[in-house]
View (cartoon, rainbow, N blue to C red):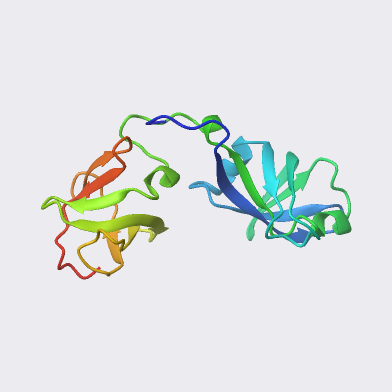
Length: 186
């Protein structure tokens, strides 16, 4: 990974969906580029803040079996053997420590590393901060939200095309430089 990481930082890789069957299986919505990528991390931290559990909690879950089906991934977690137990997982986010993610090449970045970077064009005009990224099929798109330092209050959608649009990413400085005119409507 490029840049230094604070210890105990967590990155969400997916979310637990509905119960599947009667033996504790659940659907897992994977946020990884390859949907099976979440399975590279058999031990996941489940955060139940947004789930159906009666109170906010965090728990370790261990994948002990999975099946890829036409409608997506279904997973069985160790010790979750009934639909009632599985139903309590619904809505939980699944995350891993950022330091456990595979190391990337120098010119590659995880999406979470780009979020929060301040975006400038080559004329040093500030567009705001990266709020998130969208997958469009053709290429990913940066969602840039205006800040107090922005040249205007527009949200911008800027293609994440390395070299042609995205010219420089400096994680230490917290900046991303783009070849993008302030008047472009995107």
